[in-house]
Length: 209
Length: 76
Image (cartoon, rainbow over all chains, first blue to last red; front, side, top):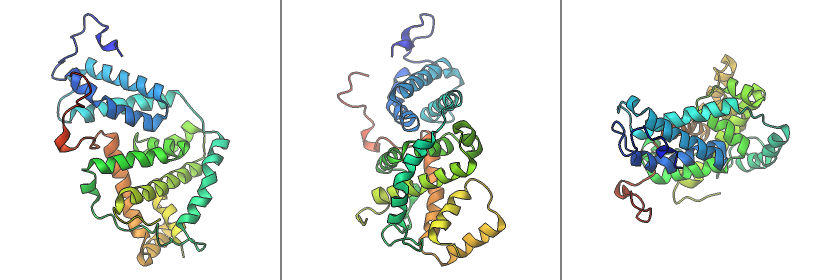
């Protein structure tokens, strides 16, 4: 926590080349939520966020200001998380994949009838205006909740793909699973997320299913 | 003919790799007659956009009116 002030010769936090330490600290909560969603480990999330804030202060001169500070700092954080995932190779055990699987059949049966067609409740209705919704805090809080509700391996794979931009081939290698498996996991994640978003936000006031 | 369960799987698959001709045609035919799956497919794209925006730090976490730090959060 106090690492920022531990180097006597460094310019003191407050304002470094146009970036104020306060501005960075104010982004901390958002950074932590992001890191935690992806890593599901409070300690590692905390460390990577701290390192990112320190790196941002150290390299503040490279912040050119064309993007928002938050966008810039999130890019630093994403890179830290990518490095962490690449080095801390963690394979997904078969048993945990099976555990993720267990509620899957049930989940499918709530979505599709025995012919594999949408049931009435879950059938996707059109989302009136996604871009506009993305400008509201409500949308993002539902979004975070839905990601958090994904089974952990499913969430890990989805976020590696969509947050960090890993190609699915690399995810397979990192996690020691087959491409087919990886695609199946991504499909499940998307199906679940979509349903969750729709019930949480897509059709306010229409609480079917 | 694909059912919706298979069509949704292809909607995800096409975000990972180019579909084969036969898959594209089957999906196209299904989307033509299905009420739910075209929305599903659009929403897959919206979901990807949202995830990318979120990861780029573009999520809105404060309302325009409440730009203040938490009043109880000590001095800043």
